[in-house]
Image 1 (cartoon, helix red, strand yellow):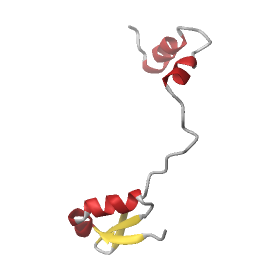
Image 2 (spheres, rainbow, N blue to C red; image 1 turned 180 degrees about the vertical axis):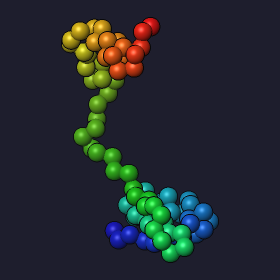
Image 3 (cartoon, rainbow, N blue to C red; image 1 turned 60 degrees about the vertical axis):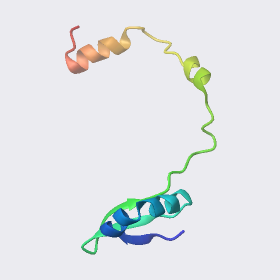
Image 4 (cartoon, rainbow, N blue to C red; image 1 turned 90 degrees about the vertical axis):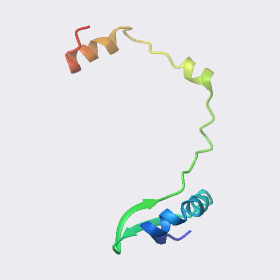
Amino acid sequence: MADSIIGIKELHKNLKRVADAAMKGKSFTVVRDSKPVFRIEPVEIAAERSGNVEDFLALKFKGDADLSKRIDEIAYADRR
């Protein structure tokens, strides 16, 4: 879908409508004083992101158990 241009005041008045349109794939360029300020784009959720808690827990650090603490000591002078 093509970008729509919307002013900040119009965005403020019609935020729900704009959010609904973004959920359907529409993008907006928001302008103030006829100058682009920021963009509103739909969030794309990748279908391959189908992990669960068990998948996360299966990822375990297989190295030095104190490595993270030693890195903090070096990087942040953390002497706890």
